[in-house]
Each structure stands twice: as C-alpha cells, then as structure tokens.
Amino acid sequence: MPNSKTIRRVWALDAPTITVDKSILLVGSGGENVTVPAPSFLIEHDEGLLLFDSGLASEAAGDPAGAYGPLAAMFEMHFPEACRLDRQLEALGFSTADVKRVVLSHAHFDHTGGLQHFPHAEGFIGAGELRYARNADSHTAAFFRNEDLKAAARIQWNELPAGYDHDMFGDGSVTLLSLPGHTPGALGLQLRLEDRTLILTGDAAHVRENIDNTVGMPFDADIVNKLDSLRKLKLLKTRPGTTVWVNHDPQDWEELRSAGKEITAGSLQPA
Image (cartoon, rainbow, N blue to C red):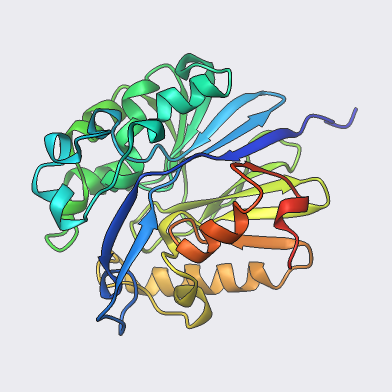
C-alpha cells in the first residue's frame, strides 16, 4: 500500500540576527556590513515534529554577550527574547518535548545553540561532522561552541554519508541532501509541499551570490567539495516548481517570509 503520509505545515521561525562584513560570507566581496538571520525551521509531518537547525542558545536572548562573550560583539548579535526557540514552540502550541527529530545542517555555533532542548530527539547529521567539530582546522575552530557540542553528545545521531541523499520517511516529503564543503558533513533539507518543492540550503550557501557565481566563503573547510555542493544547488534551482532558500540570505528571508512565518506552497510562488 502506498505511503500517504506527508508534511502538514512548515514554519520559518523568527530568528535572531548577526551582522558581519560580507567578505566573511562571499569570497571577493567586502566593504559592506550585512545583517543575516540565524534561523530554525519547524516541520510538522504526519510522523511528528521535525526541527531543521536550532539557531542561537536560548540563554543568549536579551544578553548575547553573557552567553557568547567576545563572539557576540564580533558578530553583532541581536537576539530579542521573542526569538527564543522554546518560547516560539510554545506559542505555536507545542513544547520542546514534542520535537521528535532534529536535523542539523552543520555544527557551527549559530545552528547548534538550541540543541540543549532536544536530548530526547532522534538526530540526523552529516557523517564526520561532530568529529571535525571537536578537532577542527585552525581557521574554522572558533565557529564551534563547546557547550553546544556537549548538548549534541546527549543526542543519538544518524549519520548521512557524504554524497548520499536520504528520504527520511519513505514518502518523498522530506529528503536530507548531502552538501559537504562548508564543513565535512554539511546538509540541506528538501521539502515536498503541495505542488511545490522547497530546498533549505543550510550553510552550503550563505547568500544568493554563492550559488549564482559558484563562489564559496573564506572559512569553508573543503573548497573542492564546497564548489560541487554549490553546483548541486544551482542544478536543483533549474527544476520546475522548486524554490531554493538560502537560509542566511536577507533577501530570501524577507521575500519568502512575506506572508508570515508559516510557509506554504502558495507563499513560495515566484512574483
């Protein structure tokens, strides 16, 4: 009998922001500051709630410096209390305990802060990601936060091998995408909505220009794999009925959330 289970609803949760020089996000750029969201996405599937990335740590809300120290100033973090992940779940009628699965695009600090809330959840991560996070190259080590890695250690993780995409529920609705390069286990997430497909890039791209020009960022762990992952995203963009959402890109964030935090196929239609 065919599996008829599918996605019910998707939310792009309200996000804290960080402000950096664009040169950090795109090789060859610079001279302008850009403010980008640090987002989390909540997916309600017939099999239960799934979270894609967990943003900044809840204890940083209202006082980023208290939780992140010098990083808070370096990245000009802006984190209102209303953006706390746990409180947003409550506002939607859920609790952190209701989240059954967590997909981590990669283990940088702006994606792992909320892992503390989900020790009970089944985790999905790229192969080698946590091993790299604990012994990162010198030029990337500052992007990993020990407190978050300790929280990650309490989660049982399923590892996605590099180069392999995985249909999570066997119904085609949620697919893990292998997009290594930014980090060894970098992932994206493909969501099949009603008559439209949404692809969440994680940090396989930071701004649209990464994909359009096949150009990475200075702190990529593996530039060869990164460029292949950008080419993969560029190919996926050519598919009819497909929207590629670069999760940190402020223009994507503004346009694709224009109808509010709940995302529907209709809200993703081209203008």
